[in-house]
Image (cartoon, rainbow, N blue to C red):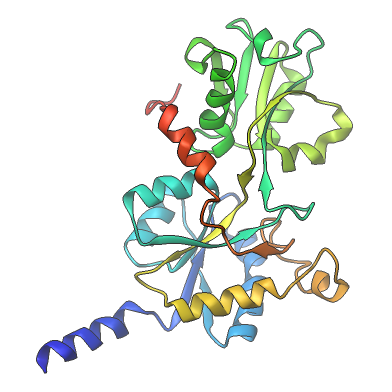
Length: 279
């Protein structure tokens, strides 16, 4: 009888009454809170559950809070999710969000403004390679994979990290003899600059909601899925109005994450070793 009581108590403690959500700290705290508060209010109305936005100071802070049970759902890109899953098996993606074009997948694109660079075969150590963050999927990982496809490697090239995809494109406009890797969905916003495309990766899933299965029940996850999946903002004006103030990562609809969605990233990790030290 005592053991049954302890089991029931652990279940009650394990599932929080309030669902705690956090995103990658890609902007200042007040702005992030505003972007996601509209979505969380919608989820409260649709599911009947309470939601709380938890600010994380850094990627490391976000992951530590998630693994320590202080956050129930986080929003991550593919590579950060795979890295998290290696450390914490209770992490499970359950919604993958669409880009503005309605596609839940994107590609990493190598681009340049140089007229004499027409493919990655033209890139040597006299050229500057501009990358986002080290743990961005389009950062070292997919960039190195694309170079390996032409029998080259970032290890032999002069590369730098500039944090954001937009910064990559800005650097390409001001730095001579440079190439860079960015998400196709970001590149589309800058198409008027006529960047020359050199190579692209296989399709990669977009941002996803990752549940801490230790903290949140399947029933609650299903209610969140139902609430998000019923919205078709790209074809329905009423739904478009509902999501109009949501973050860019979440305002274009979503799909249930497919089981094989991350295969391309998982395979890339097996053949690409990301340097631990920053260059």
